[in-house]
Length: 113
Image (cartoon, rainbow, N blue to C red; front, side, top):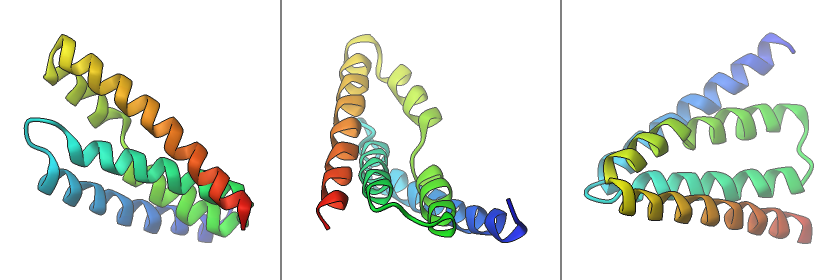
């Protein structure tokens, strides 16, 4: 690990976190669509990135930094709880299933190139 690697993670994380904030501010209302969207997009992007076999710098910037800042487990957990038992369970199942599918799709697309 070098200082440059830490800087790449920090820059990627800052960009991903800012994008997550904007998506949640614009799209979240009664249903957390923004959080769902960033979690799916981040899962697909990470699957694509891993399939392409990135170098250490690209993985630090995009995989760990950007995707780590973009996706969010904590907001997902809080929003699932706030929705209540039945809607929260539906949201949790949809998010997990769709995120796994998005990651698999991204990996598949990356492996094709």
